[in-house]
Structure formats: C-alpha cells, structure tokens
Amino acid sequence: MCRYFGIQNDITIQYHKDFSITDIQKEFATLETFKGLGYTNKAYERLKLLKIIGNDLGSIDIEDMDKIRQEIEDGLKD
Image (cartoon, rainbow, N blue to C red; front, side, top):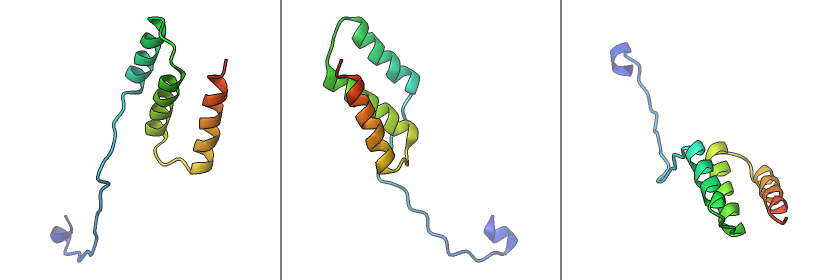
C-alpha cells in the first residue's frame, strides 16, 4: 500500500516466537469436567486457572498477575 501512495517506510515488524490461542470456555469446561468426575488435584486446578487467565489477559503486569495468583492459591486452600 505504501508503494501505491509513494510513501517511503522504514518499518520493521517482529513477532513473538510463540503464542497461544485459548478457547476459554473449552478450558473452563475441561476443568469442570475434571472436577465433576470426582478428581481433586489442587496443582492441576491452579495451573489450569493460571493458563486461562494468562492467555486471557496477555500483557498483564507482574504485580497484578501476582495478586491473581495469590487469590487463586488462597481459594484452593479450602
């Protein structure tokens, strides 16, 4: 498009080497199915929730993610 308008551009685009696309509803359904079958594994639940939240929020800052992580861990202590 820039050539068409005669615009000289010196733009470089870099992409991350990896990325993740998550179907959040499917991930929550998987977690609920796991729990519905009677399995209780706090480590699995914690990691699954962190994965869902991390992929949903993407560029959340570290302090906010730490708060979320702590709330998850506190909620799974029951």
